[in-house]
Length: 174
Image (tube, rainbow, N blue to C red; front, side):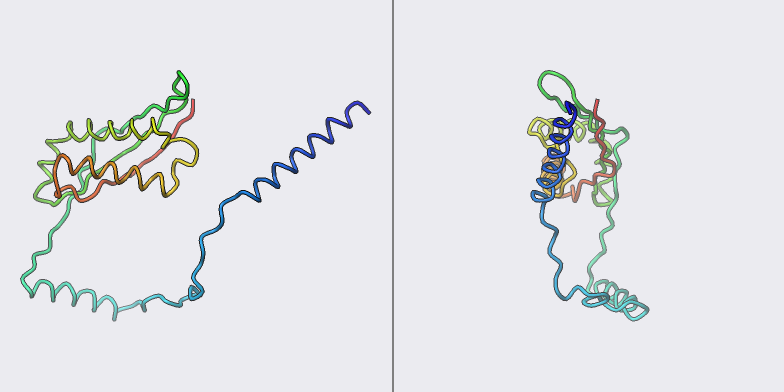
């Protein structure tokens, strides 16, 4: 009889927790009504491929040069400590690459120490603002981080820094 009350409280607590979790979960993304199977998708096959090639040929005929981009991958990963209170509670490890015009790839490689410094500052600020806590891979957190990294890269190379790519992203709790 002495175990009955704690058992009832545990069952009630679990039920309340599950109920609250179901009630407070985020709403699923809305699906457009016209998103049935195959609806709204472009046709596939040779016709689309020929049209795409024709588009490139038309652009080349107009005298526009196709600019090729290069991806400069940084040699070492970025390791960012997540500090909770007075101790390191986790480490976030990222691999980054920078998209630049092919003609600027060598310049970007020579500027790697500047990029590393600027990116680490952005990553530490992001960690200090709680960006690596909770659902750290959520689209809003990722967009904030991506935008800050790109702004930082453009501060070094200007508009030649086309994009910053996050190729690996991992959090290791201690």
